[in-house]
Image (cartoon, rainbow, N blue to C red):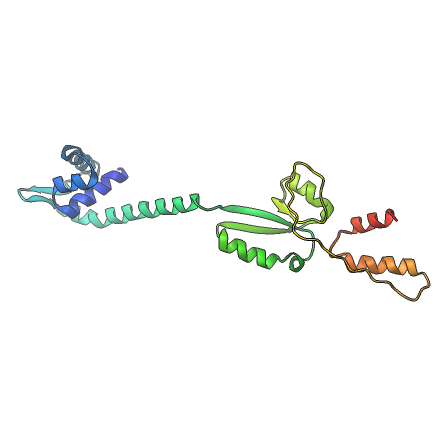
Length: 204
């Protein structure tokens, strides 16, 4: 049983005339008649009574009419939904977060993405600046935040904004350098992974 057969059945039932229905379906009268006969052969009973004034539904045709309408409507809804999916991006997008979500304005990102791409599911994963490149290359992440450039030509990078980190001078002056480093680690730990901070001090 084919979709076009059900459409033909419904059109003939609605018009009550084979010639009118054939014109609406852009078919010859003989082609439409063959479709109806083929459908009747599949269901095992006559769907219409051929009358001098046109085509009338048989008892079986009246019983099956609502089922045909439901089937055709379901197929039309399916086609509409499928075309809608073709016009929109869909799937899951894994986003690596290298720092506090509020700093990266993730709530705003999630809201905007939901409005523009409702079929895309965002998955936020914790990451670190030094690990972002390997996670992208390993396809663990689809996109990721990081500080500074990766230097990897295989990754497309987009600058978002410059970040300023606070520095604090600590007193008393005794053991001043050690105090300064400890405070610095505490202040910027949420913006930079520990390895990066330690690397900065190794350069000093």
